Length: 177
Image (cartoon, rainbow, N blue to C red; front, side, top):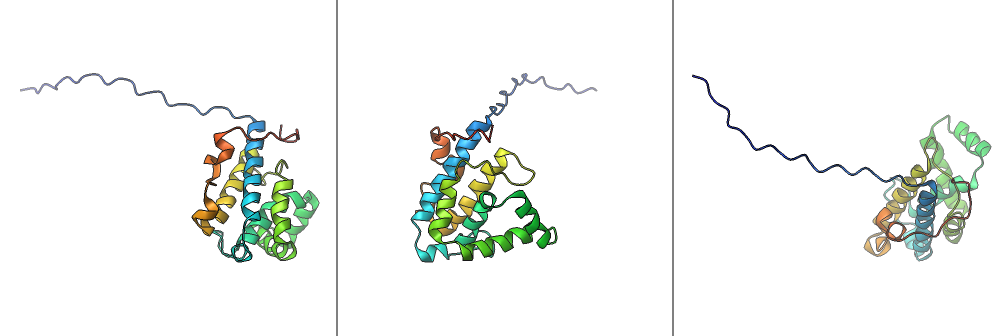
C-alpha cells in the first residue's frame, strides 16, 4: 500500500534581504570625524584617575589607548616603518611600545586635542580602507568608555551615537575621496 503525502500549502517567498546601501567615502570620513570629536570631548572631561584607569585593551590604561589612536596622525610612513623594524616586524609589539612611550610623553590635554585636531585626518589602519578607520576608532572609543562605566559611555555608544543619528559635520579635506 502506498502512502500518500499530504499536500502542503506553498510557502510564500521570504521577504527580500535588504542590501546595504553603498556608503560614500565622504560619509565614512564624516562619521570618523564625529567619532574622534565625540571621544575627544569625553577625554576632556576625565579626571586624572580616569586617565590612569584600565581600558578594555589588556595592559593599557585609557591614556595608552588614546596615544595609540593618535599614532597615525603623528607618524610618517618612514617613521612607522622604522618603528616596525625596531619591533622585529611585530605590529602588536610596535603598537604596544609606541602607545606606552607616547602615553608617558604626551599630556592628557594633548592626547584629547590630537583626536579633535585630526578629526578629518585620512589615516586608516594598515591594509584597511576608510571603514577600517571607522571600526578602529569606534572599537577603541568603546575600549575607553565602556571600561570607565556608564557615565563616560553615555550617550556615546559607538556607531549608534550622534555620528550615525544625524549627519556629522563634513570634512573639508578631499584626502578621503
